[in-house]
Length: 215
Image 1 (cartoon, rainbow, N blue to C red):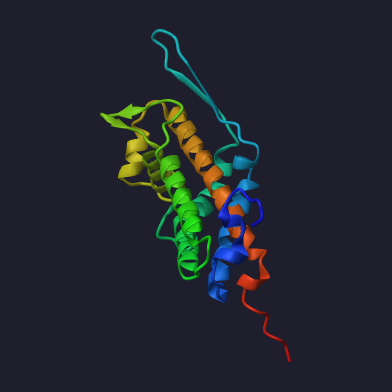
Image 2 (image 1 turned 90 degrees about the horizontal axis):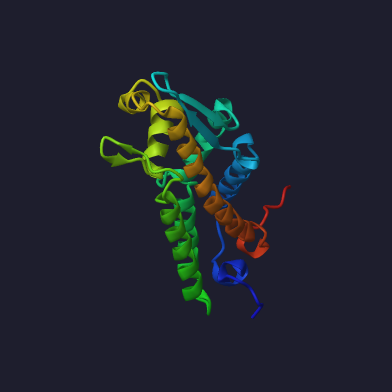
């Protein structure tokens, strides 16, 4: 056997072939990850928050990052990868890969299923990773999933709701925004590895539908 780090690198030996609709899902997933990786927010990330203040003076907040428009440019695609029920989410794509491994008996089947399980576990850990700064609001720690939910559905994708109100009352908004960006950046590292796994499939002709002759 070829000396490889993961059985997922041996795509032709572990998966049953994918149909046209499945290949389209895989290509869309890869395209979304690559598009995000090339965006201003993730291609050269800067995310530094500075907070200063003086006695009897308002606290000053400064966040050095790519800018609000850069976040607006990525949140739609990011949500497609993050929201597990979406057909091209990281979780849905791994489920698809696992099914194709399960339906193809091979000497590497068990190893490949275990490798996919580890990728799933890694995303779960990345979602729950502790922030650079622990922020507590009304007794609740602002974890990555909470911040992502608040900013996606209370500011960038939707506004004027209870989640918007929760953001508005927090005094150190720059710190919250910094941790939101950090949470997305950590997950993008996971999604990029998923992109590499899927790329192995798309580069393996025996796993793709044969082209239909024209004429």
